[in-house]
Length: 395
Ligand SMILES: Cc1ncc(COP(=O)(O)O)c(C=O)c1O
Image (cartoon, rainbow, N blue to C red):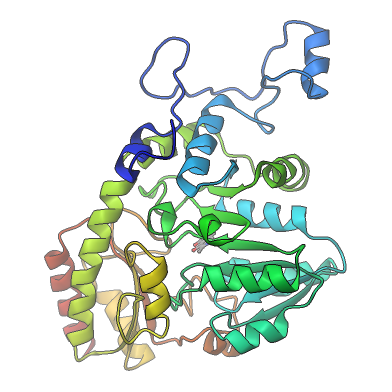
């Protein structure tokens, strides 16, 4: 199927392969290994002289169907699936970096990615420069002709900063022609933004979030040119992490993708209503949402995002008030993760970003008064009523 269909069609039919027995749904190939017809055939498959499956860590037909669909959605040549977003991120970075390399990264990242880049990679001789990539001067000062990787989240977790992918990729490639620009597109999803079309080289996802969207799978993807994905699969997945996605999970994501467009449209519309309530609520000090004209990256967000997304952060007047809100919501679910049918509410400073120091949290532009809110598919008026009673309880 060509990429010329509209998104609602692509998420249902995109790259769907007809299978031998004609089943509409993709069969779950629940197998660890694949039987060879002969020793010669096994040898040819290992030597790459014959197409065909060998062992599920190296590939599985259910997972392959999913990879092909995700590659199409992101506009990449190929994709490799992982058993978590962190699996995708670590396998991609460990494949593409070596001792002595330099990486430039944004300072607002999911906590585990942040510690991987700022603490773990230096243990292997990789030198990170962690800066605010919305600060053009800081980014230009950090880039070097030998920089190997530039890494950021298209919408930063949890401060909702929006990176100008086109400008960052153009400058990075000019200064360091061999450098690869990697964008984590988890918050935006391929329906809101396609970083590869703006000049990024690799896109990574936590598919645990919107792509699966039902709170029952942990998964990740890396999408890029075939040559890069082949390397990430054969080194980062096969040899380093072994973080392979199971066929059952691949099936569940394939199933969920069919409703990605209607889920995202409803979530984005619900979010606008909730933002409108939050900016008027006297108990809320500040709302972080890329669709607000006062958001520092509003112009970039307007240029880059097809919709403003389903994630909101907001700061209460005190840490105590934030805690009371979290303890008093009745409909919103107090849990980390995001992108599910249920609205999820959490406290980044003590939860998803608890591995960051106070200074790192400040540099990322938030505080312990911040609440992160992942809007779900409930009626937005019910969510607003729930927040209203929790705000009143916190007063
Ligand atoms: C932006 C972002 N990237 C990556 C991850 C890691 O994904 P996973 O939990 O699937 O390993 C997360 C998790 O919350 C995330 O928010």
